[in-house]
Image 1: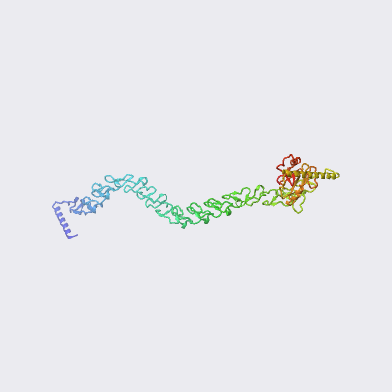
Image 2: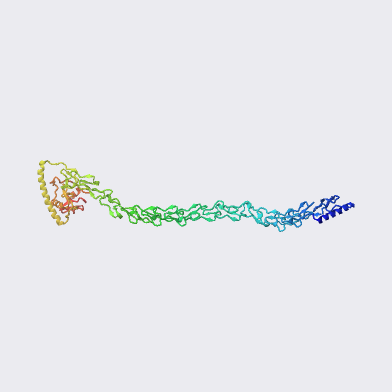
Length: 574
C-alpha cells in the first residue's frame, strides 16, 4: 500500500476515534445498518465496498460489496455500480436496463429498442407482428410474409424465412424452393433435390451425374450401356436407339443392320430400309427382293427383274410371256413351231420332245414314224398278218401294216381282204366240170363281143370316161367276177405302179353274168374291204351296171367309174 493511502486511513481512524470518544460516533454513509466502535461497516450499500464502504465498485461490478458482475449483454460490459443497469446500452439482440431480455428473433439485424424491445428496423423475412415475434403462416414466407411458397413444394409447405420447401419437391424439380427443373435426360425425371444429380440414371443416349453427356459414337442406350451393331458402317449409331446413322456394311439391312440381305441379291447388296436388291438378282430369280424364282420354262432360268418375263425365250414345248403356256395341240418344240408327227393319234404329242402319246394303226416308235415290223399291223402293231395271206416273193411283209390286207392275195381256199374267210365247197360234181367249162367259154366269148360293141358306142356318145386307178402305186391282182354285175371288182394289192398294165389288160374283157372264176385264186364276192378297214356293199352298184342300157340309161353315178374300158363300181377312197 502506498504511503499516501496509509496516511489517509490513519487520519480517518484517528478522527473517528476522536468523534466516538467525544460521544459523537456515526457510521460511514454507505454502511448498511451499523458499524462497530472502530467505524467498520458490517455491510456496504450496493455499489460500494471497503471497511467503511467508501470504495465505489469497478465498472464491471455492482451489488452489495460489488459482488455481482455486470450483464454480459451490457455494451462494453459496463453497468452502474449501484443497480447494475448497463451504462451504454445493450449489445445487439438484447434490451431492458440490464440487457437481460433478447430482442425478438424476427428483428432485422436483431436490433430492438432497449426499453420496450420493439424492432428498430422492422421484421426480417419470415416474421410478422408488432415485435416480429410471429413466423409466417403455412404457404407464405419472406418480408412481411408476402410471398407464396413454391408450387413445386410438396404440400405447398416451405420455411417461413426464405421459402425452402420443408417436405421436398415434386418429381422433376430440385433446389431449396424447388424452382430448378431436373436435367431433362434423368430417367423418370428423378433427381437429388439438393444437387440435381439424376437418382435413377440417365435416359437412353446419355450419361454422367446430370445426364448431360451424350454417348460416344459406338455406344447407345440407357446410361450408354449398349454397343452399336458391328454391321453399322464404322460401327457408328444413333446414341439413343442404336440406329445405324451411316448405313450398313454390304449384305445387311434394317435400322440396326441386323437383318441379312436376300441371298439372291447380286453382290449381296440391298437397300437398308426396304430390302430391295440394288444391283439386281442372281440368274434364276426376280422380284424387288429377288424372292421369286424365274418361271421354270425360261431358257437358262433367266427372266426380267420386274415382270418376270423370260429374257432368252422359252424351253422347248412352251410359249407365252412367262413361258407358262404349253404348246397347243399338234405343236411342239422351240416356240411351238414344229408340228406333231402325222402318225400321232389325234395329232397329239409331247410339247417338248414331240413324242406321240399313241400311234395310228400301222406305226410305232416314239415319233410314230416306224412302220410295223414285217407281218404285223394295226394299233401298236399288236396284230399279226393272217397265215392265209399269200407270201411275198421276197422276204417282205404279207399284209398292209395299217389294215392287215393281204398284199399278194389269199392261199387257196380262203377269201376276204385279210383272207380270213374259207371258200365254200364246190357245188358241182367233177364230172360236170368239162361241160361247165365249155359253157363258160361260150359265155365269155359272147360277153367280149357285147363289151366291144358297147365300148364302141360309148366312145361315140362320150358318156364313158377312161380312168386310171385312183391308187397309181397299186395294182389289183385279185379279180372278182360277180354274178350280179357286168364288171370286174378289184381288191387293191400294194405292188407298185409297175403292175398297172396288167390291170388294164385284165379289164379289156367284157364281163358276163354267167362267167365263173377261171383261176382258183380269183374270188366271187359281193363285198370288198378297203385299206381303211371300211367295208362297202357293192350289190347296189352291181344292179345299176347289170340293168344299164346304152340307149336309155343315164350316165354312171358320181361314185362309179370305168377302169380301162370296164365299168367298175368305185370302192371309196383307198
